[in-house]
Image (cartoon, rainbow, N blue to C red; front, side):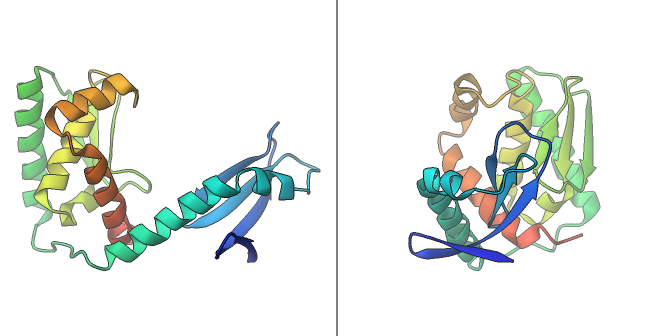
Length: 185
């Protein structure tokens, strides 16, 4: 494990060589990944150029991870209760918005709370089962909004904000809870 000092924090980092044209940075699991083209070994200029971005992202992850220790998961909801809740929420929200959902699937997902396909299929992460109902409702609403606007453009966030003007706080709550549920199931 390599370490680098960015302002006042020590950051773990990894160097990966891939068939890419341009070097890039990723933050995963609170660590910095440097993706470099084959044969490129000098990455200090890249790190220096993006030092502020790296610092902001790592600091935010550390803050939210720390905040997760103040949250509690709800283990009382059965799989069946969760399935029934999600289906009821999908029916209610899609009806309110005048949209048709084709199919709802509950499955364990590694990196997201939900997804929406071009065929109007909604996938919901089973790990949501342990979160407060207001966050489950928000994720279902978030995915149903994708039936209208496929991307996360301003138009999309305006649609979400019509029902959830506090969506930035809810998105942050979801990140906080992710630290608690990512290793469950």
